[in-house]
Length: 258
Length: 258
Image (cartoon, rainbow over all chains, first blue to last red):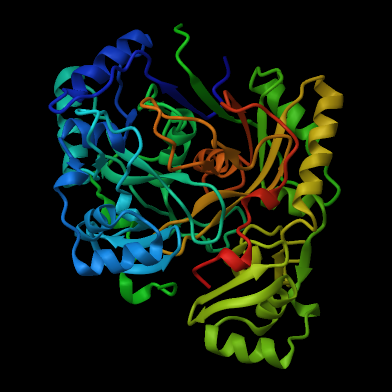
């Protein structure tokens, strides 16, 4: 073995289907044991948004949703189910773009994404005759912090926690994993004050570190099933600290692309 | 050791400063040896754009650039050096947004980014009295393909190659690594036809796999120096195949955010 800098991501094996009220920390600890991993200071665990949402009971039955006139109008134009659009609007602050098949909003948590992160796939059929959708966690940063504190209590290790989701991008095809909740690691790593090799001030001063790790984890999670929703990362290169999603959110007044 | 799915990234140690004409494959092979790594089929190497550009001689001396009237006008508004803006315009198809301190363009290669990827930091001082900037490689896909073929010849392994760069995002703070050139691995992994655990058709059908791996590599490269510009990745979860950057580029006619 060499001492080359290394980042290792492991998909925890044997994660069961997640039901409302599931103890994600116990499930993660079991998965870590199965992977022969013991948490150490500086490790990061990345949880897929879907399992956190399910554990928190964020499923909504579409049959119980009554779409507003606005949802009906937008749904007609977006060619989506009006009840689904109603749920999206309840999770949103603002509709940014609407096209047939496309509904881009500012989520109530402040980030921009399609459908406010509301998902119709992979929602366990409580009732086969019912259509369910899954919302993001109520407060993903708080969910991360609860997980972080509990992981610390179980393991003694100071770790970071990310909840990730797959987002589309304005100008590029394909989704990439991004953080929708962060605790215990820098969401944005500020490089100001660092000079480059030639003492030239760096142009890039802020690194979206939590998003880069969320993307790496997303690559390993895949999308076709829920079998790999918890990723262990070792080798995150920045010092852990208190943080939250807000670091990653661009204030509306400096957003050039609304 | 368990058989849990794993993605391991290693920053190749001992990479020297890169000069024009440098043999990046020989340098990567040396770095792999130093890291005690032997390439195997399915591995991916990620090269920082800066070292590929330097090896290809993409430095431009600002003293030799004569800004056009348009560059002067845009530079005044963007509060940037008119010669720098001239170089950016020569690398661009279209200016999308300009604000004080911000110049977002469509690069001639088709992607949207700040300053057409032209970089003022970390350009080796050929001449201490001169200011240099560094352009992206002329054809990053072709550069990747040359590296891929040469790595195959040296190692016998069929590997993928990415050239990555750090891009800002429309709505999020912090840069993330993205692919600006791809060879030998899927840039976008199409999941259409895959059902989820409950046979519901997946909403997310295209994964920006090369961008996710570029982000992971970027996390390990850091930004404050050039010491870690080549990353080895093992465990990329999709089958390698011929590919190019075009998969990641959203056609202008379906771009809702210009």
